[in-house]
Length: 204
Ligand code: ATP
Ligand code: MG
Image 1 (spheres, rainbow, N blue to C red):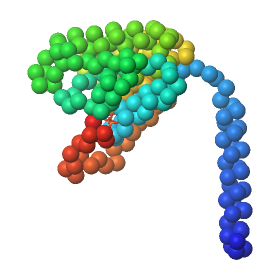
Image 2 (image 1 turned 60 degrees about the horizontal axis):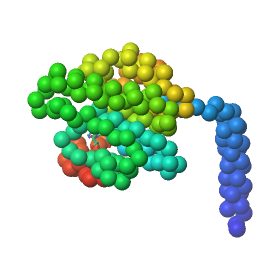
Image 3 (image 1 turned 90 degrees about the horizontal axis):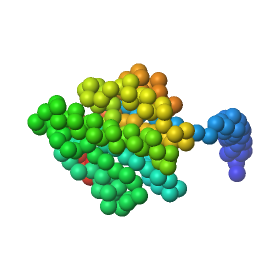
Image 4 (image 1 turned 60 degrees about the vertical axis):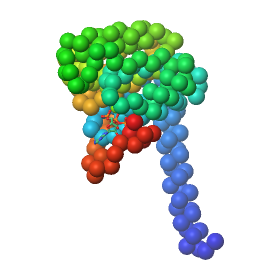
C-alpha cells in the first residue's frame, strides 16, 4: 500500500469508527418496543411499493398481515396477483364493489368505501395482525367518503404491537400528527412523463 493509500485508509477508518459510535449510541437509545404508524405520501412514485416491501418483510418473519386497498384501478397489479395467489395467509381486500372512476357514482363509491373501512377497522382491533396496510386511504378522506376523526380514532386505538402503513397523495395534518414516521415522496421526475408505458412489476 502506498503512503497516500495508507493515509486514505486511516482517514476512512476514523470516519467509520465515529459513524459506528454514533449509530450504536442511537440504537442503544431506542428502547421502546411497540408498533408504529407510518404515512407514505407525496406525489412521487414509491408509496404503495414501499408498503408492499414491508408486507414482504413481515411475511419473512411469518407475521400476520392485512391489506386493504382503497382504490381499485382498472389495471390488475403484480402485488394483487402475488398476494392473492402466493400468500394465502395475508388478508387482502380491495375496494372494488360498485367503485368505478368511469361512472363516478358518488353514493356507490361511498358505500364501497364504508364496506372496506369496516374490514380495515376489524384488522385495527385484532392484535394478531403485526402489520396492516391501508393503501390509498388518504383519498377516502380528501373525497370526504370516510370520516377523518373516526379513522384517526381507530388508528390510535389499535393494539400496541400493531404497525399500520397508510399510503396515498395528500395525506393531511391529522394523519401526519398520528403517524410516528412520515415520508413525503417528492416527484422529481417520472418516466411516464416521457411517454414510457407503465411496466409490469415496476408500476403495476
Ligand atoms: P407505486 O405503486 O409505484 O409505489 P405510488 O403508490 O407512489 O406508486 P400512486 O399515486 O399510488 O403512486 O400511483 C400508482 C401508479 O402511478 C404507479 O404505476 C406509479 O408508477 C404511477 N406514478 C406514481 N407517481 C407518478 C408520477 N409522479 N407521475 C406519473 N406516474 C406516477
Ligand atoms: Mg399507490
